[in-house]
Image 1 (tube, rainbow, N blue to C red):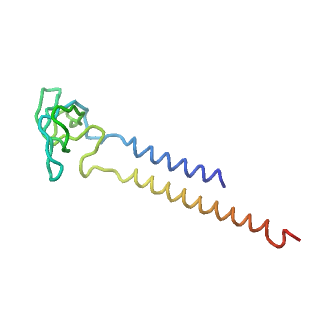
Image 2: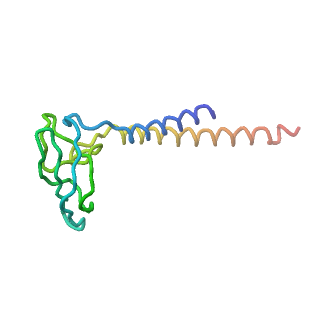
Image 3: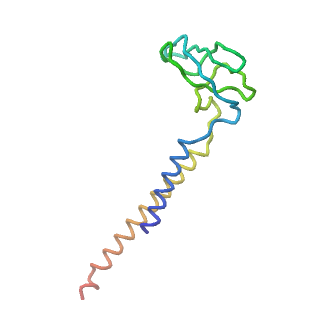
Length: 139
């Protein structure tokens, strides 16, 4: 039973690793560096302004984030055709509406499996203990 419990926790760790390593969305054509030239407050719907070093030349656009200091250099996603979308998103992140349900589903199912096997292991251990220490075992 402990081997199954170890396997369940291994699956849970694998699911968490999968969540961390989710690849970039398919529409991304590449990445480019960008420098923040205007910062916005994060208290509203503010967006920082960046100058992207795109393959076709520098492009000024908004970033899908806020609060970065002026002069900060960030890496952003380009469109599949290499153009600069408006707003640009930080490399390694997904834009709104592009999240995948698969990683949370895998993590949730792994957690349920780990909990179920843990409870089963505890019950089996308790049953084994009560069987060996009961009245029949003493006689």
